[in-house]
Amino acid sequence: MQINTIQTTPHPGQKPGTSGLRAKTKQFQTPNYLENFVQSVFEATGGMVGKSLTLGGDGRFYNREACQIILKMAAANGAAKVYVGQNGLLSTPAASAVIRELKTDGGMILSASHNPGGLDGDFGIKYNVPAGGPAPESITGAIHALSEKIVTYKIIEADDIDLTEIGTQMLGDMVVEVIDPVAIYEDLMAALFDFEAIRALFDSGFSMCFDAMNAITGPYAKRIIEGTLGAPVGTVVNGEPLPDFGGLHPDPNPVYAKPLMDLMMGPDAPDLGAASDGDGDRNMIVGRGQFVTPSDSLAILAANAHLAPGYKDGINGIARSMPTSRAADRVAKKLGIEMHETPTGWKFFGTLLDAGRVTICGEESAGTGSDHVREKDGLWAVLLWLNVLAVRRCSVVDVVHGHWQEYGRDYYTRHDYEAVDKDIADAIISGIRDRLDKLAGASFNGLGVEKALDFRYEDPIDGSVAEHQGLQVYFDNGSRCVIRLSGTGTSGATIRVYLERFEDDPEQMGYDTQDAVGPLIEAMEELAQIKEWTGRKKPDVIT
Ligand code: G16
Image (cartoon, rainbow, N blue to C red; front, side):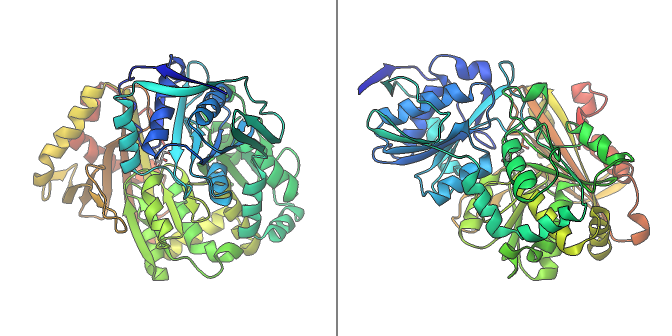
């Protein structure tokens, strides 16, 4: 085996963001860009000698080439074995399940998640730790530091591995096992959910549309929902993973999953609509004529989880990212269990899950999951909804409205301003941050500010601290606004404004969300003046 040590120079800025390193595909294709990062990961995690790795991605453009490069680099760095999904495919939650089940020394996931793919789209890579979750900031910081001073990387000279056939091959001295990307994941789902009850639900004529958005969840949803659970063929649409997602933006929200939304709001709507994103960790749930906000979905799933066999003894606790609505907090209170508020980024749930302090986690950005893996899991959320509906035998609307009657309704929306000039975005945030101490007592659009905070998180398990995780403005009528910059975009800056209003008067729960939070939108604009700064008349995306 010929190991080559290649001279290289740093590509500045290889700093993993909210979830791994994301950049334009063309940037990933520039000489040594991927290689530098991979070598930095290997070294930041103590080297690869004798270790095993899980490898796979969401099938986007450059996925296969990147797999071959990483395999050859792992072999050159002395790895003993790499498990790689057939054709280089693994959804993010399935990769987490494989890392945990096969006890590999971590994994590499190739994805830019919900960002568009293709030659002109985005690519990404993420390192997950042996527990199966995204690397914490201590490791991503070390990776970044090494990438800033890298001078060489190692790669073997060898032909590409055949990733199309399941089985074992050698790459130099390293074993490569090509695995079925679905099997381990499906077994895990079968252990958590009452597949018999869900099969009976479909047998009774229950109808569903699952939009896989031409992304990775297609093969998983087809095999599990149409295969094992017996839903009619055609239940899963856009079920073939395509390198450019068919030109779609694989983000399951009402804007980018518009055909599904139109179906669900129309006269021929099936009982349940669902969608998942590029790498399969996000989900969208829609009932007939009823979109379920991710924050509500988290609260509803937490309140009903005991209906599924995997959670029949109850849940230990719930965690949500800070900008996620506080609907789940009321469920935790009623159940008498722990509730945690963490910064945006699934990686912040890892310590709580590992310590058994929480069972279910969720985020406003369409992510929900549990302690079965260490990633959010789109299909898991859909299967839990199916399990709940199979037991309760009522409509999604009944479940949602019943939940509101019991716990109150959190009107919730997120307004995104995308590809904003970075300096302007920074000026907007620092402009508010500088005034934060003086905001309590002030009023905007007639709404009084109760308190305003720059979110700081101290991890209750390992004591690590994350500062400046978003600005929170609490109003004295119980409403809240949060503003922060996205950590996943690849063009300029994305400003996210999160708006929520709690309502416990049953007579006041039927409004359109944008109308219900209208005064809050005005208040936030008066405070942040985003339109003035950016020259935009409205947000680019409202979810
Ligand atoms: C990632 C993270 C999530 C986060 C989301 C949005 O999701 O894993 O925890 O909520 O990005 O982050 P931001 O607001 O910083 O853009 P994914 O699905 O992209 O991996």
